[in-house]
Length: 134
Figure 1 (cartoon, rainbow, N blue to C red):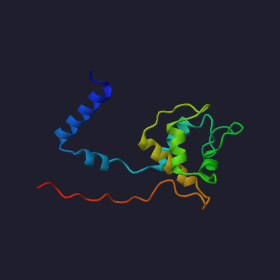
Figure 2: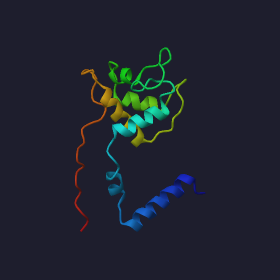
Figure 3: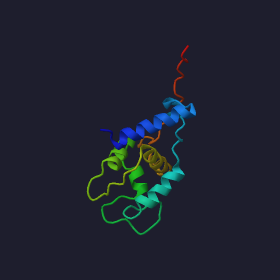
């Protein structure tokens, strides 16, 4: 019995074959993280509870602002990612993609002023080139 996921994977593979694109090329073509897209996501998904860059009303008691989250001592991309991908109550399950998570991290990076908090987005590094099949 095929699941929806299996059907989607077969369809994606067929599309890649038809267009002459390998899976590695498709992954390599994913867009770089965007702080602009991340801010738009934060405004759309998070501004009901979190103060996002001064927009909206004040954050409810005990809920951090985005600037506060970005500068919290001990903060890391992993901690933020875990919170967004596996939310806890009362935070809703936002169902974001990994690319959207990277965009939100890129936006948070623009708000980070605490030098003790490591960067949320690692500098872009080129992937190793593999030899072509002979």
